[in-house]
Amino acid sequence: MSNAVSNSQMDPLIWGAGAKTLEVFLEPTCPFSAKAFGKLDELLARAGEDKLTIKIRLLSQPWHQFSPTVTRAILAAAMTGGGKTAAKAVMTAVFQHREQFVLANHCSGPNLDLSIREVLQLIEKLGGIAISSPFQLLEVTNAMKWQAKYARQNGAHSTPTFMVDGIILNDMSSGDTVDGWMEKIGLS
Image (tube, rainbow, N blue to C red; front, side, top):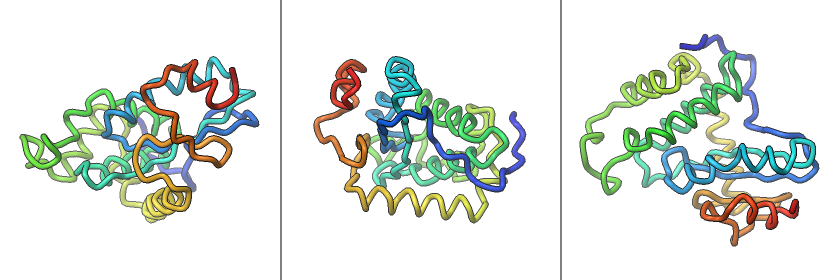
């Protein structure tokens, strides 16, 4: 398991350094967010890191019962020595094992008996990142609040939501191809 020594600040979930900015609001247990997340690396590779900046914003959704815990775990991972790479590993692990972090019909099933501590232990096991200590940091609480406020201020209410250069694109979805995304972003 990766070292959990915390950074003095959170590593932003930003990849690329291009003039065009895509902000993607994701919920870490949402199947549609998982679909979108799975295309981001290809999008950045095809667009070019010098042309596109991708910013992942986390938008916890109340109908996904473990959403706040998993969202906080991702932000905690960004506080470790692994920074955004560790956060991405946690997101990948959760998306690949979604069924272990959701309730059947959002209200029942075997995961109903999971405690927050058990969810954290499962994330650590699957992601290979020690997050229990940074999970408790005030900086993570502040980051959670900032993510929620930022989403509300920008009109992102469900996931995934795509925002290009500060404008929400309501016609962009997880079901689009990477080519479709590039066209909508203006990079084709």
